[in-house]
Image (cartoon, rainbow, N blue to C red; front, side, top):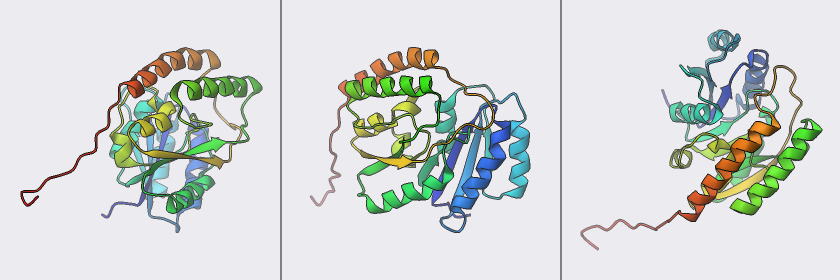
Length: 244
């Protein structure tokens, strides 16, 4: 079986009601446009998420399902999905349905226009549909992150992204790393581009985060990523043959 050109990786935890609509939208956006697969990673959901995914597998040959045997969080789910993916390029979506799969072709079009140094196309939610307190907290978090990391990214927390699989797997792995992909890609010597995308209200389920736990975790992570950037060292390498 030939590898698809694109793998869509979706981490989920207790998103039973959001899975089928999102899978349908992904297929509607991509089928006939590009050879793709969908890799769902169930982070040990306690609801009927896994049963829904198993049913959908019988209906959609593009769908693959992975399940964590212990709950491990979003970053680990994304990484395990990327490791299992067969496509050279990865698109990610949050499992809550707030990202619009119709934006994936927009990211692919941006990639077609970009140079080879661009390894990450990050979604930018220009019209966020979250609560006022969540938008306020996100604005401040983005300002602090931008000042500390200088990653020139207005919305690093947006779940819809397109990136090269090989470049992603070469990044240092840690919990919550998915929130810092632009800075980590730039640390590795690659270029990143932010692309305006749609954002939608959550129609089912509940958010897995609140402003306080985001802030407490974010402070430690920011310090760690800033340290990684400070201590990074890139060296160009040339292979020498015996004829040289």
